[in-house]
Length: 226
Image (tube, rainbow, N blue to C red):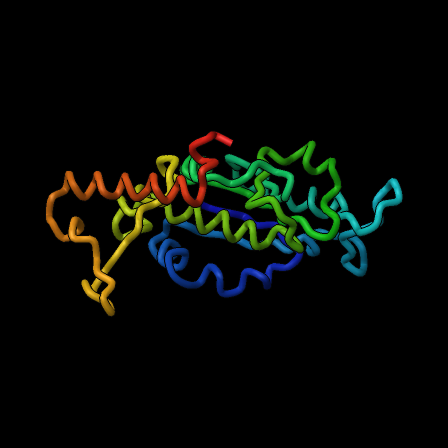
């Protein structure tokens, strides 16, 4: 998977892609990314990329020309499965969406800032709008990083155990069950004996029961379909 990230603040990504699973994915040639500073595409001598909004609202809006120039340049280099805009009014990121996007070869991610981007960018170029939750951040950089993380771990070969991602929360509409490791007894708190029984059928049934119990307690909306 190749991801191009358009941002005003490429330094915000420093370190994030250079550790853990994302780093290993790059080392194994399963994932690559490029950061593109939108200011580099401004024709203003001060590299200005924002202006006051029409209509008299407060705040500043990212101008259309630098963003469009960057996108159009990248279009000459490769064909994209999606041009994604990270925005709080987009479709909320879900595991099923992540599963689908993880099969893409080329993605472009646009990180907004300030009051937002000129609406015409969304009308002309954007094919998918994604939110990571019902709250507002300073920009789209953190959501882009979150999206990359959730996608890359689903790419075959990235995780040492490819079945690991299949047991994650939300893969089957429920939260994941409790997990335990050594020691068996920690100050009187012990591991459920069924997990040490060696009986795969009983263990599977226990995990399903605990997943449903945890989902009913913490995320009942997953059962109600809200």
